[in-house]
Structures are given as C-alpha cells and as structure tokens.
Length: 111
Ligand code: FES
Image (cartoon, rainbow, N blue to C red):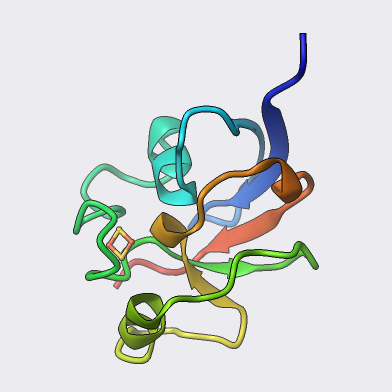
C-alpha cells in the first residue's frame, strides 16, 4: 500500500523538536496536525478554527520546502500579527500534501 504520510518536524513553543507523520489523505492542515499531536496547549492554537483570522497558528518555516503561495487573507492576517518574520505562515492555511516531506516548522510564540 502507498504510504500516505509525510514526515515533518515541528518545533514546539518550548523549543522541543517533534518528528511526526502527517497524513496527506485526510485534508488536514498544519494547524490541525499540531492540535492532533497536542504540540501546543489547548486554546492557544487554532482559535479561529482555521479561518485565517487569529494568527494563533503562526509558524516559521525553517526548511526549503515548496509551500503553496499565500492567499490574500493569510497575508492580511500576518500583516497585523505579532512576532512576524519573513518565513512566517499561518499553519491553518497550509494543507498537508505529499510535497511536504521533510518540512520543518517552528511554532511562533503565543500572542
Ligand atoms: S487558526 Fe486562526 S489563523 Fe490559523
């Protein structure tokens, strides 16, 4: 059977690195993966439910992984968020796909 998981690394807010397998066949986004593995405290991530309206799912992309381009609502939210860097993305706007094998992200501080 085909392997439908990609291996990604998520560095949590305490700086701890987690190697996890994320499913590509469940229409999950990165924020939901972080929640399902409980890598951030309940209520501190995914606050808006993945609507690009809270920035609680902000993360920094540390690998060279090709990610889908930012849409306007993600860009707009990030322009108002705290601790934004050049490599900031909203986890809820990143759908997990097979191209994301080897992705490394760090969760932005809680704001
Ligand atoms: S969960 Fe609110 S912006 Fe991503």
